[in-house]
Length: 511
RNA sequence: GGUGCUUUCGUCUAGUGGUCCAGGACAUCAGAUUCUCAGUCUGAGGAUCGAGGGUUCGAAUCCCUCAAGCACUACCA
Image (tube, rainbow, N blue to C red; front, side, top):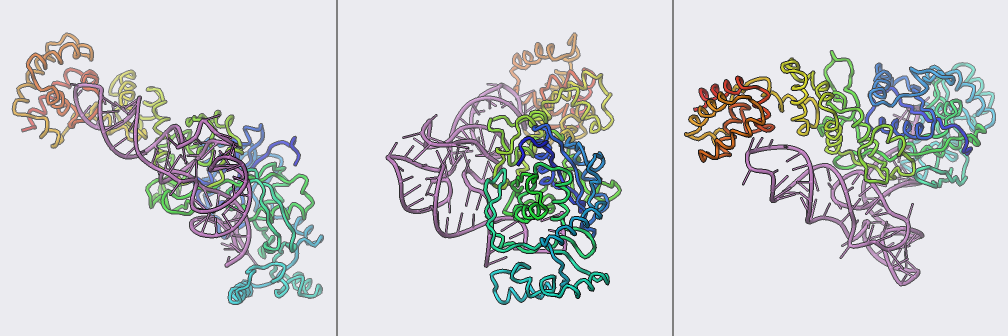
């Protein structure tokens, strides 16, 4: 293949529903490969199956890629000089190419009904035939160009009766194919069948449309999921049939994403079953609809963390680096470091990635991210203090949306006190000690972390109070339970008056 | 059933004939951080490199056989 050819790759999903993370990863690898090689990334919609068309799916796909930062250079919603990029709008184009194959004998007409096809398969199964498909042997007992006189067939077709066009797969040719990830793949064409290229509804099948479009759109590399590996021989034969073998793209078949438990490829159902999203965005998108499947965006993932996690599922840089910006991924990416075997998706590690991205946010950025989750308290303190609160708790978070449970006590006094903590720490002498503390707080000239460090430990040791019980009792008064950041930080932020108020409140409630 | 692909710690993986009685990350467990929880740091356990045979002075790495898993096997993509 021509090495100097411009790199042009495409992501070509079907709008049959939401894109799942396997699809996003395929798009990502295409994107990374394109950018790494100064090439173009195209988005094409393969909607040749009208019966499976799902309204909204196309917009969902576009929005998902956009959220991930996987932006097409060309294609649907972007434009370009190889359009249209929606296959149903290219119907007329395919007609012309089918005619070419019919003419040169690489394809033929078939008029078997679905019932006849079922009967054939059943018959072959009953006979325990080695071949169970519509191939060079079995086509001779079916209704097609090989078995029906030309005039009769022409008559059938010109009278508007249904027909399909099948590929004329030759017998016994040894094919040696090359895959960028798997190396050589050898297949004998006798094991292949005569795939339908053109359906009775006047639409091409995936195979035909795919080859024609990839050729017309000057695609240099076909990077897709491993489920397509079995049809690579057909596709290569199709390039040959058209006489396009010289400009044929290189193929790379990506390993599958497997479900976290058990075996098999990750499916749309696994998310609900195992409690993690399998979709980038929730589906359906329409917020008035009940949520059917959750999305990474709505769960609180940063898109950068999401694609970082996805990139490492089936590819590795060969170094020990795990956290990559998108630009770093582009620079590090190479197809020969993509693994061959399927990868089980690990939801725990996905969360870890988000945590890593979260702690890298500055306090100011985090405050911005967290504002929707602060229940209207985002301006309760000055900006710097608000940022400080975020900084104090950020390492405890996997997702920004979890922030309220870590910070609520900065904004609202506790209304109840954790029974276990009280039972463990609140002793008969505690009320007296707390009253003493109120006095000490009142006498402090300034009320901040430093002044507390200078007075409170000394007060505790000089009276020989039990430090664990004392500190935790204060914490119970302020927070309501034995949790949270350092006590002095909490006290300084909520302030002297609020601190005293909360201790008094606790004294009146805890018996 | 047929065809193809794959096979290193629970999981993702490094490893392309000696430096590997196999390294890292997530998860797990333990210790430290003496106000808590979380986090962080340190450490530990965890892989007979799918099995068997061969080549070689030497194999996770090369060859053969087998097994298992997965994918495909539609007028779906």
